[in-house]
Image (cartoon, rainbow, N blue to C red; front, side, top):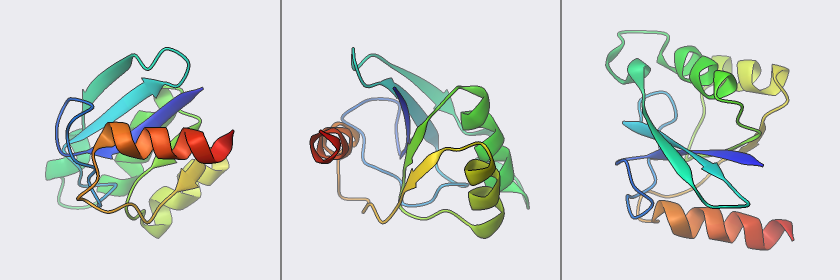
Length: 108
C-alpha cells in the first residue's frame, strides 16, 4: 500500500507537517518495503488552491492513505472522491517514520 504523509523535510526522520496544502514535502511510502519518494509540494507557495493542487499530486502518485495534521474542505473532497483514506490530527512533533509505524500497527 502507498501511504502519503505530509512532512517538513525529505526524510523519514523529518517531522510531520500539520498542514496538508502548505507542507514542504510529501513522502510517498511503500508500506511493504518502507522505501519512499520525497516529493516537493508545488502548492506550498501558491496564493490560493494549495489544498486541491496538493491533493492532485498525491492522487497522481497513487497514494491510498494520507497521514497529516489537517486537510481543508476542498482538498478533502478531492481525496475522498479518489477513495484515499484520510488520517488527520497528527502533530508536528512526531517523526514521519513514527507516524507511519503507528498507523501500520493500528491497522494490523
